[in-house]
Image (cartoon, rainbow, N blue to C red; front, side, top):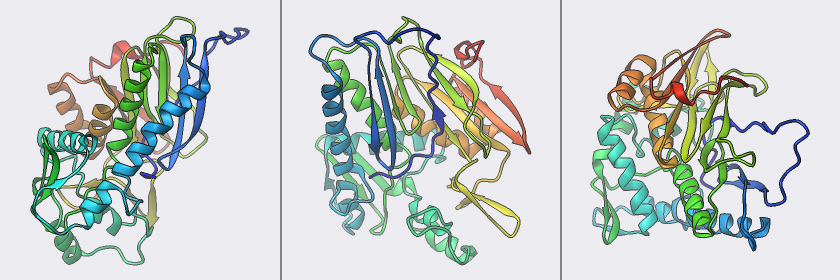
Length: 340
């Protein structure tokens, strides 16, 4: 397992009442990477059935698990993390591609996305050991911050390899590997001559082509509240990906203070802002997966400024108690469906 993804998007069953499923429409679902996946194919060619979809999907999931799972001691990333060598460490092309892209997002966001901050995440109680008995003090944070930082990590695509300049550096790909997984599944489906499908892996969503009614796929964004899931907005997608990063489920309270699972690499502390969730639409699922974390760290004002500079379709949903308020970029507005 890679671990539970932090995105929260739900797909609504928006079929018209009374419509019957077309014979060629397929649907499969199952557990994966500490969460679940749901896949719909609106128009499958002859010879492609649910079993073929599941085989193709499982092959990708197994490959990513063996390469990028931090929960498997024998995975590539676990072996790289365990190594104290500062020489180049040979890895698969997939792993090098993901780390290389993560470092590019780190550079473009001035370090707001950092796949090396796992020790800080664990220190604040969001690692495998859970909530800490004692919160980290300044001395502990200074010690941990000296051990992390994306600039201490390099990726090489040919031949594929990783290198660390800090022997104890560790890499956690939970914030980007699920998105890459969805992209690989989409590529596998395209090789099977599938053109119209929707893939949802723990809230990382890729929508390709049209749904069974010949319309863009309609994806519901969940209201960022501690209650039963219900839609806040619906976006229409055709050949695009969408995800959400939010603070409203993964947190704990201590002495009247809420501690978020999202760590600000600048401070080594959980973020503190009124942004409840952020929704990002983009060309690939790896892209939206990583950038959603960037905007979640930055908060609404700084995040929207960066999104505007990069002309990205983004929605920021803020919470004031039970009151929700959203602001968007101009690129996001045309994607919002007028009805729910």
